[in-house]
Length: 273
Image 1 (cartoon, rainbow, N blue to C red):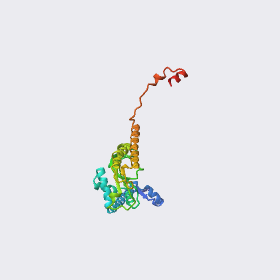
Image 2 (image 1 turned 90 degrees about the horizontal axis):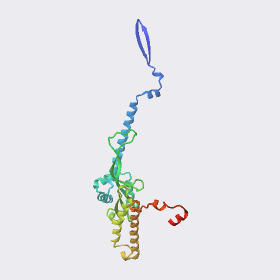
Image 3 (image 1 turned 60 degrees about the horizontal axis):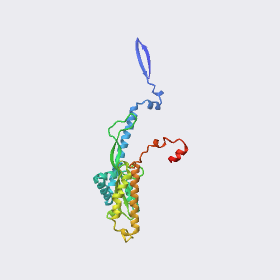
Image 4 (image 1 turned 120 degrees about the vertical axis):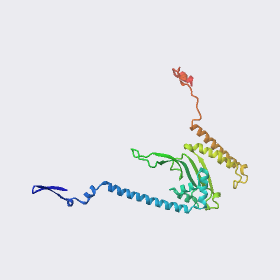
């Protein structure tokens, strides 16, 4: 705005002349208060969040509707194994991004395994302001989630389902064609968890097995006995390797200085050798 001063009859008159015609539309946009743009962005962001939440709710209900007897069997095994209620397990799996892995596992000739991890996961703290560097305070919290087993660090409990046949899995045969198991690797001690699983669960189950399919002699068969011996030997080797890694075997320390103190020439070295 241009302010001009004119004197009329001894009085000072102030007249404002709007120069809007000299300002382009883009310039007007640039001088608008920033708060209006921020407010518009906030509204859009809020609407987007509401839309995403609405879609997520619809997806969850669609998944819940397809939970038949097969899914219920998996849910009940998980609930028993990790000490959660079936309702908690159900809410967890229908909210999981990898829910399709369950569908692929139950499909005819589907996946051979289905893995779940139950372990501490860093969760963002609610209602906490950002740190000066833009990061947030995270708190570890126990979480059950579906996994491929190769994308997340394994630090807790693994619950797994293995299918023993390519036949169609139904509510009536799911308990016969799907095996369930768990092993504990708390604090990332995978070798110890695997050793315990094999020595306390797998080997006792094998040695009590009565039906070995085409091998009619069962445990008296030489091939079966060789197989069981190989499994025992593997567990023993695994245990020994784990103890070595954990520094359970200590080598005796020797005072080298006493041995080399008087070595002066090649013959002394030969004698010491």
